[in-house]
Amino acid sequence: MPTYVMLSTLSSEGVQTIRNNPARIREVNAEIEQLGATVKAQWATLGRFDFVNVVEAPDDATMSRVSLELGSRGTGKYETLAAIPIDEFIAQL
Image 1 (cartoon, one colour):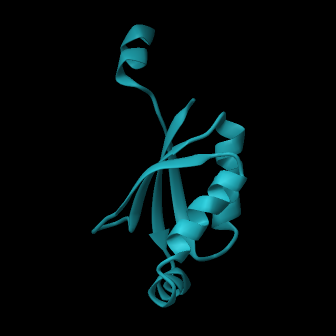
Image 2 (spheres, helix red, strand yellow):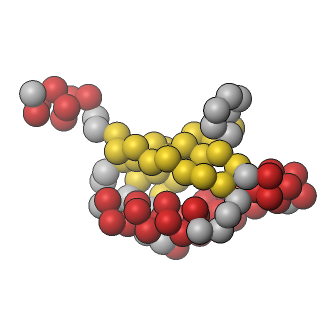
């Protein structure tokens, strides 16, 4: 299944939501599953991004739907990168 790296930056509203309800992070992960993708790994990070997520989805269209749905809420900004396994990348060269 294709893998994606999703970089997330919370808005001030998103920070307040997490502060008031830390369990919201896991709720969003469940919502991502309802959209057809799966969060395989997740880290809170320091610096430019607040979270780094490794997500599997069946295709780019599903991942686009996840990104648009999350972005439409106004609680964060998302940058999604397709991740190509290194062996597959080398084989394509």
